Amino acid sequence: LAEYRSIRAALESQPRGTVSRIALSLYEDEAIVFLVRGREAGPRVWVQAALHGDEYDGIVACLQLIEQYAEKIGRGDLFLCPIANPTAFLAGTNPSPKDCVNMNRVFHPGLAGDSYSYRYGRRLLEEIASAADFFVDLHGGGKYLDVCPFAMIPVNEPEAYRKALQALKYVRLAGILERADDRTGLLIHALAARGIPAVLLESGGGQAATDPAVNRHLQSLLAVLTSLGMLKGEIGPESPAPESPAPCRFRSAVELRFEVTGLLRSHVPAGSKVKRGDVLLEITTYPEYGKHEVICEVEQGIVLSIHTASLVRRGDYAVMMGIIQDDSKGRDRK
Ligand SMILES: [Zn+2]
Image (cartoon, rainbow, N blue to C red):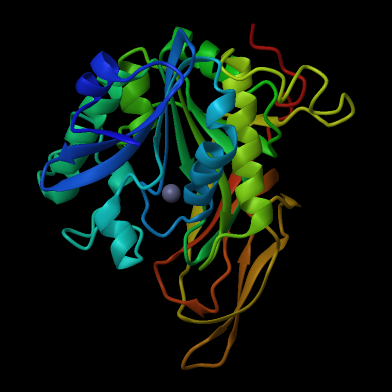
């Protein structure tokens, strides 16, 4: 592979129909980006994984995309960054050990932080914004959680929102969380604010990548690239099958944290449809050895992500549910 030190250098020199490796200098570290150039000019899409260092399914999906589909990119330029947060990946943790800040909470300009993840994140944001006109951020549950396949898209910029939703039309998902920018500092919001359609895709979780979760991410990427006209003939309007239900679209979600420490005894699977009063997780508390339950407090929801590791600590993230509104099915926002 040809090697470059910047995206500009690659775009100036790299011939169409080839793949290169770009070592991007980001603050104190380096992220590796592969650039797959289609034979014709077209959209510039940035796909990345492991902004959270312990989310492995997306990394493998990026590698499989390069290994199996690079030659099928007919139009446009695909920037693939399999490991967007290398120091976190090498530590095996969600955040970088340099400051232990969640890297997907640093991107709002109003946030005051100035530690490593904020500085690295600002550089990453500038690189993506200068290179791409569409963005996909692959995530998963990480060590402690499992997620069902769902997407988050920002709603603040109508044009970016419309394009992001359009690009998901062939993607099979349990739900789409349409998020207003609540200043939490997600990268998709920072990019949408600059007019770049941005999608966050969730799949998988646990200590190791698994074939079903990797494949779900890979199929989603192929579907997005097909919608954008970059990849011919892999996924078409006939797929998904006509009978597969349209994903629920959520405008809000609730997150619950554990109020106790102990051992997880049972949990509902990610993707479960739940209603008020359902037991979502059961814990044997320590040192009391008492019984504690986390109960669904919304009328109707879908479990988007849920804690699956045996050790439960007070304050840990327990579950996120997308709230089903009466009108969320079949609603057409056009
Ligand atoms: Zn993540």
